[in-house]
Length: 508
Image (tube, rainbow, N blue to C red):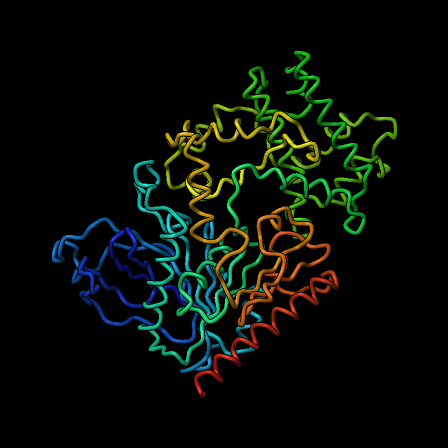
């Protein structure tokens, strides 16, 4: 592995700009993207090219000697050419989503296993405004207007051109894109909006439909908690509902101090807004466990249900559901080394309003901005099927949009409608996209679950029994469920078929 540092600049809006490890260039604002090359090529073949941090330009490339530039950003990417069969091997593109990428995105994963099999060049691009691809003032509200899925797709298109130029690629190098969750949607949309750039796309757990009130998220959480194949039961769902009802009743009875102490809250939830935060924090423990069940999280569905239904020897069988929820939270906090349970609405506002790059590395501020401007995805609990508290309302969650970003609540439905009109919702205008979902994953409700048989190059859908969010993207393991192993084989067959088809089309 090598780690060389160079920089590239082009305008922030629409165009693309890299911080990379190959050759330093400074792109001008000309539409044809003329550039000034100041320094020698420092590219080292057969290594993973890793960006650690961008240094100042070398003396011979001082910014003072260059034309003035419009606002631009660094965008990080990684390359692994260890498996690449030059010069015509395919390119596997890993698209980054609402968080940082790392070298592991080109070193490990199911797509990497397939790259080794097919002799592919591996590249991974970090999403603008996430990870290290942020300007120092980029998180100020007035600058977040340049953060959107459409800009992200334009970045990928520019990145495609850059990699093609740098590695002297041609139409003989077939590109396949990969992504999971939001990045899975980007992978599908890339194929839909830029079909000439990627021959096929794998979209894992991809929520391609924007939805303001995503109440069905918690409906699927309830169904998954009742699924005996993953350790759930109807009793588990019932006991969780009973526990949340008891917490809610205690708060309404004026026992906020007792609730705060019982659950180890960071502060006593005296105000209604703080009490909603407590209920959200409690629900998040269960929701997150279901979403990433059996993927290395703190708990699994089976473990939660054993605690909540008294199926462990550790707890007194006579304890109430409220007390069992206390035990669950204690175990979760101890295992995850959480000092206390979040219970402050003021702290939530403060965290989401923090524009410091170090504290914003996890992407929470940026992602909430995108939910307000593009997607919604607000996971509410006002539906009767939700096993948590009815205090988790749409109003409570959308209040943050004007509080943090000055985005009026009345504008949100229009934003969501535009996104679905532009991309097609859960009937996207795509072909040659493989949509992969787990039936335990609540996000499947916003993805494509059925194949479109009317298309010549039809999309394909795989629903994996007993698996959760993006499980197919991980490297295969001996403990994987049989359905997951079969799904990976199906993905491998589809990718191999695309590559073979692309090769035949070039010959024909």
